[in-house]
Image 1: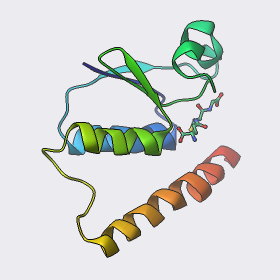
Image 2 (image 1 turned 90 degrees about the vertical axis):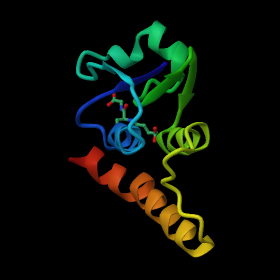
Image 3 (image 1 turned 90 degrees about the horizontal axis):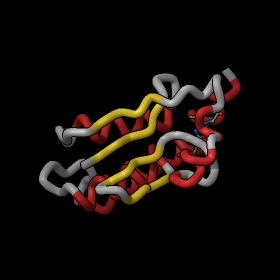
Length: 111
Ligand SMILES: N[C@@H](CCC(=O)N[C@@H](CS)C(=O)NCC(=O)O)C(=O)O
């Protein structure tokens, strides 16, 4: 069972939702109310000590950090491959991941 703690405006969570959908996996969403600081409640901090979304819970085991979650999904569900096999293409994919983590996410936070 795959559960995702998410928020509609979170680019990090959106990245994981895209991977789940591209791989056509069944998953359950837990919409977090960030405005009400639901992410800082002790129950959620047990899953994600930084108190941020997304958090993926796979068969009861929490996995944090959006890029790490995406790579986990690729390893755990290899039937639909999203990471290219060519070393050069893989490098380009990693640069895009880095760009989202370091630039896009920061820009969205400013907005
Ligand atoms: N490096 C983390 C960043 C996660 C992050 O900062 N998430 C934001 C939403 S995009 C969040 O939950 N912020 C908490 C808040 O706004 O209170 C990841 O990629 O998962």
